[in-house]
Amino acid sequence: MTPTVSDIIEQARLAARAFTEFGGHLIHPTLRLGVTGLSRSGKTVFITALLHGLLRGGRFPVFEPLASGRIAGARLSPQPDDAVPRFDYEGHVRSVVIECKWPQSTRQISELRVVIDYQSGGGAMRTLTLDIVDYPGEWLLDLPLLGKSYEQWSAATLAYLRRTTRPPLPAAFLERVAAIDPLGPADEYAAIEAARLFTDHLQARRQAHQTLSVIGPGRFLMPGDLAGSPALTFAPLALPGDGEPSSATVWAMMRRRYDSYRDAVVRPFFRDHFARLDRQIVLVDVLAALDAGPAAMRDLQDAMVAVLECFRVGRGGWLSALFSPRADRILFAATKADQLHHSAHDRLEAILKQVTEGAIARAGDAGAEVDVIALAAVRATREALVRGADGGLPSIVGVAAPGEWPNGQHFDGTTEMAFFPGDLPADSTHGGDFRSIRFRPPALEKTDDGIPALPHIRLDRALQFLIGDRLR
Ligand SMILES: Nc1nc2c(ncn2[C@@H]2O[C@H](COP(=O)(O)OP(=O)(O)O)[C@@H](O)[C@H]2O)c(=O)[nH]1
Ligand SMILES: [Mg+2]
Image 1 (cartoon, rainbow, N blue to C red):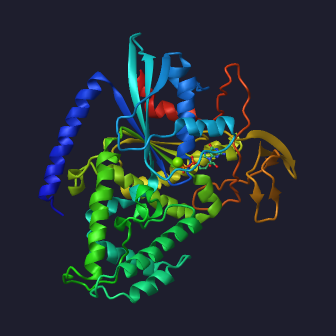
Image 2 (image 1 turned 60 degrees about the vertical axis):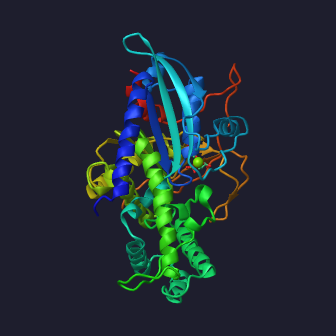
Image 3 (image 1 turned 90 degrees about the vertical axis):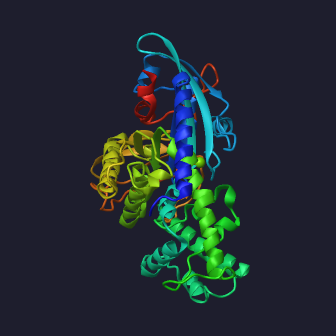
């Protein structure tokens, strides 16, 4: 595809913005940190714990600027983008620290600015403005749409749906599509019905597979503020190989909606948010995928390829006319590592490393420094050795979320218990006998100032990689 006039105008706009931002950054150094991951991967908890640690001074021995006492203070400040909702730090921290509940899940992009005063290595007082942007990883799936027409997307998506043999099968949707004549008159009801069956199928896959499905659109999985809008009411159709539909047909209507989704939703997200990030952390619930089995691990690997491809865009190709990512460090983090005894943390990290290396081999180098880590933003468990048949089993102790397990065991959500979560597999392609457990947040110790610190695992190491070098 060659750049169009609008691509060229876009490029000029981007250049102008980069110039203005660059000028501003010389006076007020600013770092934009993107936090992404699929729904429930732990974004809200991660940002809450990170901010709590920065604002009240957490126990972060590996985060050098804080550990060495060079950070004089950090405070929240009004965010730069008026059109983006604010990350509800106060509400989330109240929930975890005071109410002992995990924060409400959010399904939107949000942002928060924190200003850090620190002493540089040379002794001068400096300020770093850190903008944290929380956005659904589902939205990164939409990158391929930028280069596809409705016809191309329809053909690719239908081919995939017809080929797939893994349940849940899209039978209801495919039946519906077979009954639609794309050259027939546009019928709003038929469009809504087809889009509903298509979305239902995507959601069902998401539920069943635990990880990212490689077919989008991403907003069908995570609509944000667009739920119910016509830009989200389209579906692939079985189209003739060529020809042009007249404007009154279903085909033309679906195509208009697809185009507006691509141009008014997907493109501005990549251009206005994604491309402006300096650093990125991608949170991955590796333990949930391991629990779900080898097929989920393969999906996870595909998802990582898709994510890395978003960062490669800037390195030439027609897409770089639309946006070029500037992130120079990307951290992949396996979250909720507190479900494991610390003796298994390195293995979790090694599994994530295997998955990322596989993705880099397929997607290619992202042009940024990439690292992996296993962490728990908020550690909900302690450790214990529980006597087993052959000696001590490295176990964890915590309060499991209330509910019933498939084995009939009942949890009341208040009693502390020891668990042996099973062994992680030696490599990512083999299932282990690991089982993922949902814990309640930890009961926190009271402190003198009444604001307890949050226990964590390796959150300080993540911070050091993501922003440590900018606080020197
Ligand atoms: N044990 C444990 N559970 C976590 C941690 N972080 C997140 N969770 C769990 O994962 C759920 C989803 O986290 P959340 O941050 O809301 O995910 P988001 O959808 O990516 O923002 C929470 O409700 C918790 O049950 C953690 O550090 N430790
Ligand atoms: Mg969230």
